[in-house]
Image (tube, helix red, strand yellow):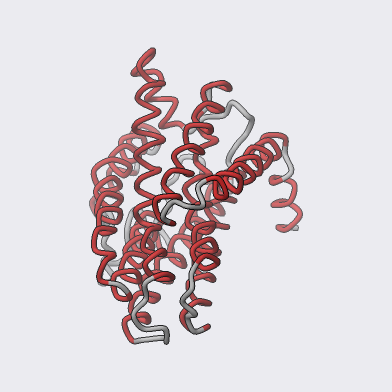
Length: 300
């Protein structure tokens, strides 16, 4: 029954449009790859993704909804994981490659499904985008290009650049203890984010919880376990690149910016909305920590 429900959601009209648009972007990317074949691999990826971002921005502008770019976030790391592996001349052991492909695939599939299944129609726009559009009016389109397209593009690209160093410049081709540490953080993030979203979706599907706040499961240990998982994912990805190549140090920019963006941007914005929709949320704030879990405290 659950599988049939998910299949129905994925085959809705906006979902088909999204798939066709991204398939077109993928084909364009392949053409650009051959056109830029003489350019350094990492530089080539940045140039291609900038062009794709501009094209997706144009599509979003034409339909008055920039939600379509949200799929870029989960799909790019997965595509680059495969791309860097195929273009590498270094042969890494299976114990080093398989966990990475598995965790990134799980993370990408989950977020892609979340994005597609939450899209009600082709003009549907995330409540945050709708709020900013209303506040900024005529300036929103320009703001969207830089803040909602270019900034996430660089966050994901810089974070995924760790994959380039992992596949192209790994100094040790066999599985190491440092790989274990990195995969542990990466896998922990993927599992926590998937489980947290699953618990929240099940909670929201119950009509009796319309005005209630989820305070059980992972949501009883911190108020935003899904964001905690996302942050761990990007730190794990960075550490994997850094432990395998000392030149990946600059990729630290991505997890730092993503962490700051969530702590000082996404979470406060979401909590301000929670205040207006759920009366008990102020009480929840007093007994459940925001991001770092408190395993000693009991649930509210």
